[in-house]
Image (cartoon, rainbow, N blue to C red):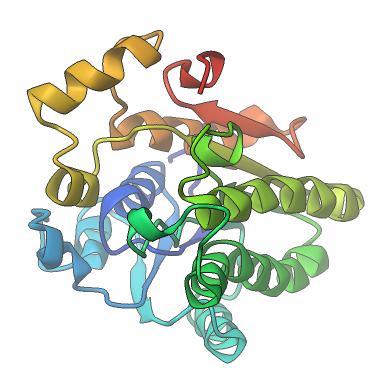
Length: 269
């Protein structure tokens, strides 16, 4: 019996990268898993190697049940379908990890004084708005159950500012997630629903490695002086904190944002 045996976890953006790491780690703890992504085969795009045909298959190999639901969580009807499918399949929702999102528009056009309306609305939707939609859908069931654990995913970018105004839309969206987490935690606390968030820093994911060459010796050398622990993070570093926030280890913790950045938050921007 694992720490999460009998629990059902919904993880958005779980077709690859950090979301996949959360799904596999929670599955290893015994949770049944709902893998959500806009494209469940998205690992191929970034050459992320799976140990089975799908992330669901990887979870099932760990001895749990798993289903996949392709849905665009920026759209409320699709969020409603995601949670309806979860309830039809498993009858409950115990854990929600809101992982979908990212800097999905070119960073070189994201400065605070010049970012376009289209980029601004898109990045806020894929980060902040989808988080709100998924939390609201999960809250309905969790309030009735009088139990639940929600983990929202912010970013180091939502905690610290920078001096060039870059990735302004993403930074504001992630800061909004932190404040929304606090507000929701206050509302849902009397229902025994815990709401927390994490703020990862520079993590070596397949997308970051392929798009930004983040795992190159040069990138590691540039980043190390700004990180007190002198290394970039691995997906498992984040998954272990998600374990804390979704198990009984955190039963007296709510409304918090935990930075998973090797101490980067301590450094000047």
